[in-house]
Each structure stands twice: as structure tokens, then as C-alpha cells.
Image (tube, rainbow, N blue to C red; front, side):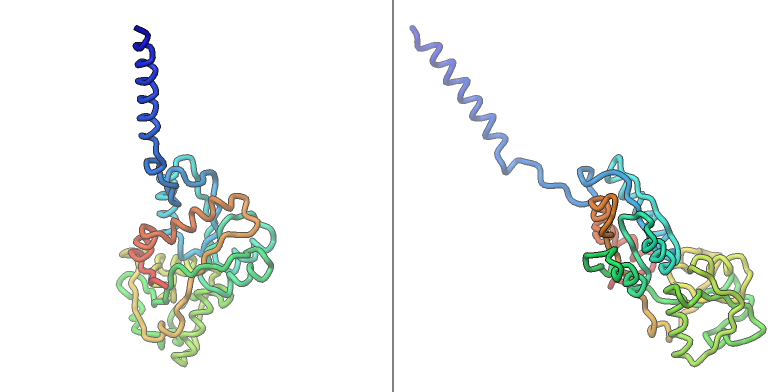
Length: 264
């Protein structure tokens, strides 16, 4: 008659064993991928080239949606100016430059210790206001005195690339204004303040119907590589790495490709 309590104990032990079997290592959740809800949260500060404005803003919103509680803050501008700000102590987690030369400005000072990753490439296009009132047909028109021309300053990537294509075309441009980033140049075109400018083709696409783009062969002589790197003194290095991986992910590549960037 004392076997009943023993049976109850055995039944309880069997139930416990079954419960433990249900929690076997094979059933444990997989580690979170970058960009998932379990990835590092918090504020991520990104310094990025002006030409990345539209795509990175979109990727920032996607990243925040995938990571509740996260916040991506951007500082967009000319890559040379951003590098200077970083070297002067501006706090940031991630730097995305429009040219390796400006990334080198921060790696040379020890602000980047990892090897930067090239994530996209970009090339120049002639930008003209809607309807092309200046009747621009090619780079040769940039040497005409009677046309108003806007270019990037040589120290920023779009300006350095412009210099290369003009040298390749044997054209001396007659610039009426030199701007510190490509978006400032694009604004001159959108407002109809100039007849033509050189910007990236991604900027032409982003401008929509306000701007028309004219491709030219010499653009192949100055294709810009865009490197990205987490900063050595990043306040939120884990967040910076997570956003970098988000940019490098398949979803990130789709957004960048749709904007007109080339794969590296």
C-alpha cells in the first residue's frame, strides 16, 4: 500500500525530465543578428558624407525600427570637414567617408584602428536645372565664360574627383562658385542659380524632376570608393558596429543600390 507515494514521485520526476528535454540546447534561441531587436541599443552617432544623406537617413529609420529604443543621430557634410571635426575631438561612433583620402585623415591620427571597409562606389554626373536652359551637352561647356558653373571645392571628394575628370577631358572649368559639399552644389542647380554643376549621379537621382543628369565618359576616370569604420574612441562602439553591419547587410545594399550607388 506504500507504492502509491513512490509512483507519484516517479511521475513527478518523469514530468520534470520531459520539461528539461523540451529546453534542450537545440531549442535555445539563436544569437541576435546585427539589426535585430536584441542587438546593441542606445544612441549611435554617425558622421557621414553629404552624398549619403538620403540613403543613410532611410537606413537609420530602418535600424531604429529593428532595434526598439535605439536612436541614430547623423552629422552629414563634406568628408574633409567631418574628418577635421573628428580630429579635433568631436564625439562619434562611426565615420562613412566619400573618399579613402579623408578616411586616412582619421586613421593617421589613430582615431580608427580597424581596417575601413569600402561599402559602395559613386561617380560624377553633370547636373543641370530642369529643361537644361543653358543647353549643356558635355564637359567642354564648363570652360565657357558665359555659363554659370558650380563645383565642389578641391579638398572635398566631389571636388577632387571633378579635378580628375577635367584633367582627363583637357578642360579648364570657369567655376562661379566652389562649395564645401556636394549637396550645396546641388542646391545651386535646383534653384536655377547655375547652368551646370558636377555632382554624384546619386544626387541627381535624389533631386527628382528638379534636376537633369548628363553622363559623360570621363566619369570613369574618377570613381570614388566610400569607406566606413567604427572609431577607436566611440562612446557607443557596439552600436557603431551594429549600424555598420546593418549598412553592409543585404537590406542595406538594396537601399544603396536603388539610390544609384555601385557595389565595391
